Image 1 (cartoon, rainbow, N blue to C red):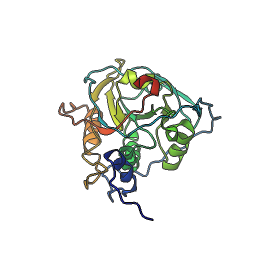
Image 2 (cartoon, rainbow, N blue to C red):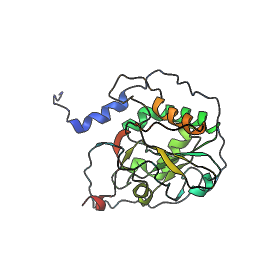
Image 3 (cartoon, rainbow, N blue to C red):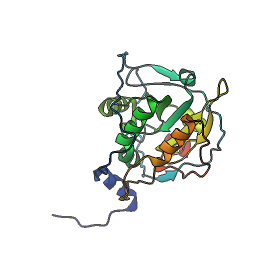
Image 4 (cartoon, one colour):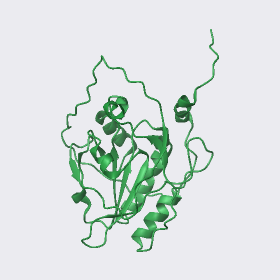
Length: 250
């Protein structure tokens, strides 16, 4: 027997996963690909007590609260795919660094995922360092856990390390609040990385019939790599809120 009802707004973001990506070939397409060395897999604490039941709702959020000029915080995080541990010092030789907070399940990330890979491959050839971080709690979203992160990175051919912030301390240090969220830093000589762009990928959203171009982020990267000033007018990134550990929300 069919059941007729009205979808609640909190369920709408799940339907967006069924929408196909817009057929778009951005200007930053590249045939560049990376290879990875094999490392033993790390073991993470992803167990969730069966006695606890967490009810979560998808929440839309946008990047905010971080001022340009902000110094990039240090971090030391594991990469589930390779078992390697990465820190900020691993990127010191690069003139610019893009730090992205993403995850596996978010419809906003899924909408852009393939084009994030294309953009990253293109600009990594030009000297940009790129790293992605997932800080979501596996207590509420086990599909964002390290084992699934490794599968995701392999499936989509991530050319950048995809790191697991199990404690969520790095997300707090950066002031990250949503996925996807983009932090573009530039480096002058021996000076520390400074934030020059904290905005959106482009105007495309899962619920909008707007082509994915990567325009906003690519223009900022072009400006940094060419030594030009990054425009101060920046639209915030919009996405799913980071899923904090349940005890942090009490």
